[in-house]
Length: 305
Image (cartoon, rainbow, N blue to C red; front, top):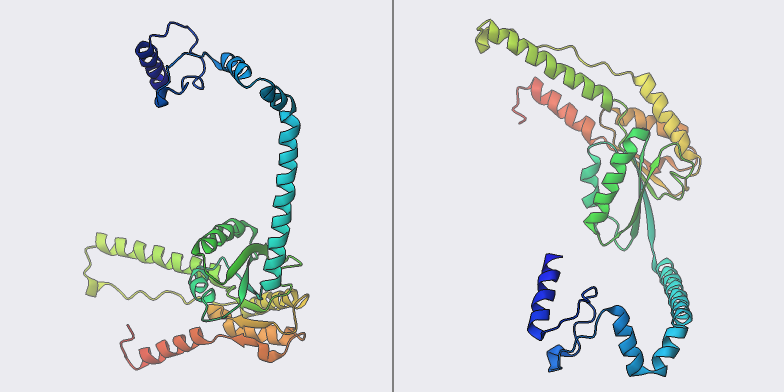
């Protein structure tokens, strides 16, 4: 506002204008930059009167019919816009080659590692990927929505759309071509178990420090091993398999990678599902293989770092 006031004062002084009308910034340019006389026209009302005298009946006709004219232009614009959108949508539908991928348990931290590879052209060439991120915990939906925004920001060539759903939704697994199950039943339990180990180890170290014990004088830390409730896990995956089976395509493939519960989840899916061939259900045993290698290496005193 101060810039405007200063500019008005300097313009008035330069052109020796005496009028007190300074309300409108629209009227100060009567061809001043093209060598005009710099005549002060006035505010907006004065300008309209000036234009009326200059343009005469042409301006009268325009001002009288402007509302109807603008409405007509707006109606034509919205009709054309709607038509363009419909044609664009029709073209996209005709050229799409959709591939629907559903990630069960997408709230798991490892889900972030999937997307760059999953959306690359190497894995599903010439396909338009429709992603569904699901969870069984309503409180995790907000984190899935944030994840969906990050996926959109990747701007991958083959990526088409992403949506977030709860696993008990009727349309969660509808028309899916690939289901990736990373919903680890024991994930929360393992987190609590490891947190308790860290707290216990910290407490013991503090006690040993207060007792001024050296490292070789401290007893070895031997925590109680975590116990897995396999029956509850089997029932959980059996229920999940029943939900998947309710509206799945016969050509759908299921990839199971649930860390500690991969084998029991695979068994539950194979035993429960009869709407797709068992060959379409694959359990990724890499985690179990790595655990076996680690145990063998420990027995043989091999440095596996």
